Length: 511
Image (cartoon, rainbow, N blue to C red; front, side, top):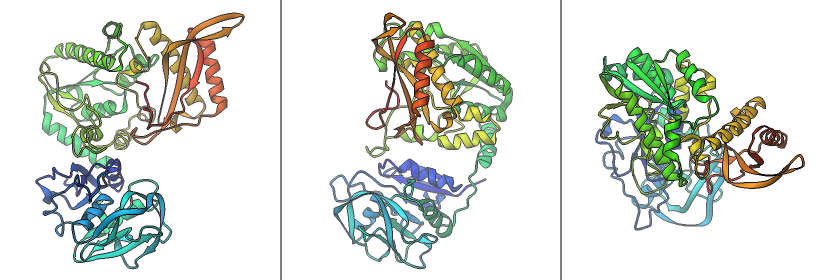
């Protein structure tokens, strides 16, 4: 089945991924491409959205898209930088703003009988984020909405299906943002809303069957949501021709290896558990630098996985749990914040000695969509609701060098913290939580004796995608009980602190 598609051109805005996710919440498929790498098959897209940007249209570094196959030929929505670009280079005028146009604002004027603004009323809250402002509209521009401080908050161009706004409909602070996108995509551009988890499963299973045929596929399971959903999709498509390998790197949570392995077997997956704890600890011995630890863990995983894969005969494919943000972030677009943020171990091919073709069933979808697809597949909600857990595991939550004893200590601490969150009904209110073992000892008193033992930091954050995060204001009573339990029950710890740093400027993990 062919779905209607929306093309989102990325000019480097930190919100570009949010635009795509909001479009998909309308059950419409969207793709993000760099503004300077417009797909050649442009006719396959029914509408185009231009994102915001940290650049200025007035600067020497203004980003110039080639809109010759888009403008006047397809419905076009220009957001912030896009709106200013259309104005500045089409007979209008963009100048530095005399007032700070950032944060919440309210629409004070809405032109009547405008389909683009249907069901949106005066006073509707929008989110501004720009230092330039449109002083004069482009040729044939028609003003359709204003705020108290921004006269040209929204306009359209006569004779075209082109709309432009100087606010961000994709962020939650714009209360009618989803309605605005629906007005543009459904009522004006005429797109069908048929991109659903059910349709994704059905089409992906068929695509896997066509691509893989009767070949064997190997998949490294991590215990996380992405690899689990990928495994269940593949299992639905090719059954016992899927060979799953679940490696214990010795840096998982307490009892996690056996518990997750049992879950996988209960789901009918063809899975082999490999306990390589000692091999990973040996590879990490004496390493303190976070990047060296990550590389050692990654290299050890590849070696273990390759050893196990070679025990299988006639395997031709490697499956990976790559998701859409991995793909987007691994494509350098503009040098802006949504361009290359980090390299991903899932993207960019395999080591030379692993001559396998790649199948990535989740490559087109976001994390929240992965969970919805998992629910459609009947995966246990508890498994789907698991917090993100870093690939290197506790290896980057033990600051400094790693020993078996430090792993034991942190596993015990982490188990008390995570189980406590569940018992207090707090787990699902937190996006990610964990404990860090700090490379310092502190003085304490237990009974009448002086102690000199480890300090641990607890961390809990709320977020939607991990790009930004706020620390969670956990109840004092919970923190008090958790601290007491850790100090009383975990040998080697005499001090507990709670991390109240947000991202940015801090990161979620400490390493």
